[in-house]
Amino acid sequence: MIGSILVVLFILLMLIGIPIAFVIGIVAMIGIFNVPYIPEVTVPVKMLNGLDSFVLIAVPLFILAANLMNSGQISQKLINFSLSIVGHIRGGLAHANILVSMIFAGVSGASQADTAGVGKILIPNMKKQGYDTENAVGITAASSTIGVIIPPSIPMIIYAGLTNVSVGALFMVGIIPGILVGLGMMIIVYVLALKRNYPTYQKASMKNFVKQFLDTIPALMTPVILIGGIVTGIFTATEAAAFASLYTVLVGMFYYKTLKLKDFPKILVDTLTLSSLSLFALAAANALGELMSYYQLSIWAEQFFTNNIGSKWLFLLIIIGFFLFVGTFMDAIPAMILFIPVILPVAISFDVSPILLGIITIMTLAVGLVTPPYGLCLLLAAKIGKLPVERSFVAVLPYIAVVLVVLLVIAFIPGVAFYLPELISPNLF
Image 1 (cartoon, rainbow, N blue to C red):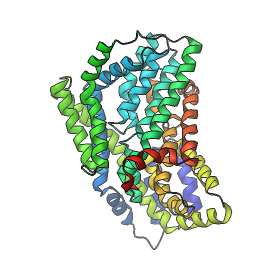
Image 2 (image 1 turned 90 degrees about the horizontal axis):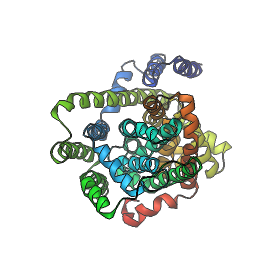
Image 3 (image 1 turned 60 degrees about the horizontal axis):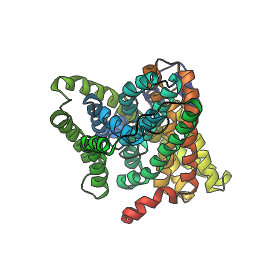
Image 4 (image 1 turned 180 degrees about the vertical axis):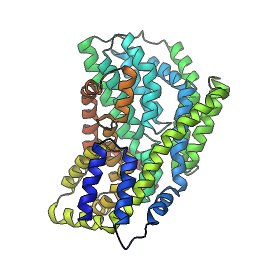
């Protein structure tokens, strides 16, 4: 009876617009206070314990690195370099939008920072170049989802902490899916560009390309150093995040000289604001996880799937559908905290690798970044483009389809995602 009331309360609080982090905390508190065998002090203790992890320090640090890149105008350098590569293709600015999101993903691990930083530059420019606002917003929002697929990725760090799998292995498995999503989106852009006659840029000369490449090398080296350092064991994920922040400060202040001391107060406030939202949701979800453990939801889920779902492939389809639904109203971090401990034992019973489950979960929840009512990346891009969310969502649908196609390929042909990591570093698996 209490469990049913809590579910109804959870849905009701979300429907009236209370932020998901507070919804989780309220439900956890009410639920635990009504269980006689769990002391009330469990709520704050679990919330504190949920944040007592060295790996979680990487979350604000990667967000800080992304904000430093945006404030230091390094995003503009990446855009210029991307244009020198794909600008001559029909719809070149849109292709550059996607390509720069793929490069940005290799530094920040935060899709929202990508949407804000790249969107503020490219959405107005795309509108001036004759792109319709819907497509400018749709491309920007959709391509920013690559930020949590291509490593480093904050959700991957959280998932690794939950399941005790290798962060390096998860990072490596995300590379090919992220590239495939980016290329798929570029195909959609090219088809639309031909149909709507989007403009192109003059093909960059070799001299100009080399100039842009040399100017961008310090920024391009960041993902190489980060991913290489983590995979080879030189860095932990947290150390890599700290290095990324320090490296970005040095590059922005002393190489490009676009980052000033006066910029730091705003950068730090923005970083703390975004980090606190994610980490508070994580802490609250850890308290709710204790309540779910009391009700033995993981055992119930395993029995349900074992008795009613006999196929590994059907199980994966159900998981994808479930996280597509959850992602529409919940951020990836609390969603994983709440449901991965329940789902993981079931996945293992179906012989699904925890790493495969991780990339499937993260890609599926990435779709939630561009689907209302949560859809944070969609909301940011729509705000920048001054476009109603409804029209923005219609524009993003073709790109969501690309993510889902790649997701299904990865789910049912895991070798596609595992090929590169097993080739480069088989000892990770």
